[in-house]
Amino acid sequence: MKTKQIVYLILAAVVFLSLALFTRFFDIKVKVENRVENPNKETPVVDLKEVVIPATGVVLPVKWGNLGKQMVEAGVIDRDKFESLYSPRGGMDAASEKLLYGENNGNLKITAENSRTILNLLWALGLGNKNKILEEGPMVKYGQGNVNRFASTGGWTLAEGKTADHYSAHSFITLSKEQQALVERVSKNIYRPCCNNPTYFPDCNHGMAMLGFLELMASQGVSEQGMYKAALKVNSYWFPSTYLTIAKYLAKKGIKWENADPKEVLGSSYSSASGYRKVKAEVEPARAGGGGSCGV
Image (cartoon, rainbow, N blue to C red; front, top):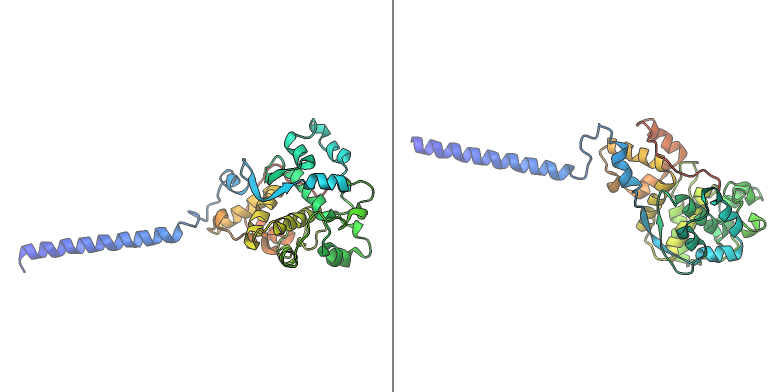
C-alpha cells in the first residue's frame, strides 16, 4: 500500500475516533444536565436556600380579595386579639393590615418575614369555612364528640366568643362537587413534619391552614399539579429547616430541588414526622431561622 493511502487511512481513523468521543461526551452531558454534579458531596445550605425559600418570596396562585375583612366581620378573627400579636414588634405592617382589612387584595405572596401572618390567616380560613372534611372527616371521628380538643381548634384563641362556634360555620368559599373532590384528594396526600397526619386530618394549625389554602386554590381554578407545587412552596416557608434538609437529601441522591415531584415530597415518605426522621438519618439537618410552632 502506498504511503499516501496509509496517511489518508490514519487521518480518517482519527476523525472517526474524535467524532465518536464527542458524541459520547455530548450524550453523557445530556443525561446528567438535570442531576446534581457530584451527588455524594453535600450541597451547601446557602446554595439551596435561595431555591427552596427565596429571599424575595413567592407569589401564590390565589387572589386574597377581601377574605380577611370577611373573617373579621364574621368573628373568626377578633381584630384586637389578632393585632395584639404584633404589638411587641411595633404593630402590624401596612401589607398585613391590607390583608386583614382590605377589599381588593391581589395574589398572596409569602416570604420568610410574613409566613407567620399567612399561616394565621389561612388557619382562620380553614377553621371557619364550611366544609364536609371538617364535618364528616377524621376531626369528627377522632374528636370523640369534641372537635375543640385539637391544636387547630382549641389552639385558635383569636376568635370572637367560642372558637367552636366558628368551626365550619361560615361560607367564605363555596366549592363545586368537582372542586370538593379535588380538595379531598389532594388533602389526603399532603403531610406536615410536625405530625404524621395529612391535611385531610387538620388537627394542628399547619394542617388547618393548608386546608384553607387548598380550598382557596380549588375555588380559583388551580390545577391539581399546581396545587401540589404551591403547597410545597408554602410548607417550605412554614418549615424552612425541614425542607432545606429534604433538599440536601435529594441533592445527595442526584436530584435537584426544582426537578423534584412536589406530590412525592409532600407525601408521608418525606413530609410526615416519621418520614422526615428517616431523611435526617441520611444527612446532617439544615438550620434555618424562622418557622412557626403549632400555636398562634
